[in-house]
Image 1 (cartoon, rainbow, N blue to C red):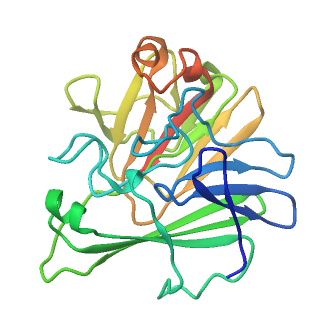
Image 2: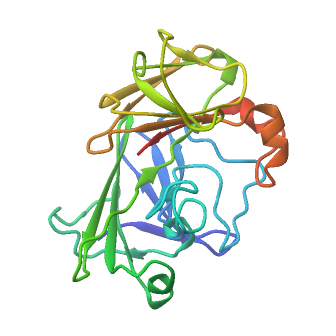
Length: 264
């Protein structure tokens, strides 16, 4: 499997994906996390916190963290589960997908360990394929139950998009949908706006969302199209200024250039 595996200054191995038009992506073995996606003009499309902590076992704020087997605090495990705090391995047998054999794809796997079983007693294999193509980054996760009993789990891809100015961004595709407002005791409401815009802290879980959500950055004249399958919900989050100051691994002004639209 040809690939470019490098070690950065923090000692975290990362795979660098490239494709013929000049775009690139970087994927860490730690957390199986995409930490960079640049277009053919070398513009960074993913947000990374200016205060991100790159030292395990801390989670890295930015890119595309993987939340498994729990999202948020909706369970007994640590916030967002443990997959983002584990070191994954290269997967040489990504069945039923054919093996990746180019510089534009990588297959990773995370298997349950004895330590994991102490806090979440279920045997599993979590696989992830990351594929880069012109104008597109595709993530294909698969969870395999290797236990002798059924289990349920949560899975979320936390997509940190880089934007020019959060107040100039709108999200389309979630209008008329029901959502839980995490800033209002998780009460359930129905979205009334034609498009979502931002002028303060925002944290909502939209239910039964369409396969396509558009994130429109007016200042950069750029539109991200988030396509998802088998992940019915979407979490939209921006901490705004007060919450940003309270988060140790987020710069005070970072909220202005980020928007999370998560596939859940």
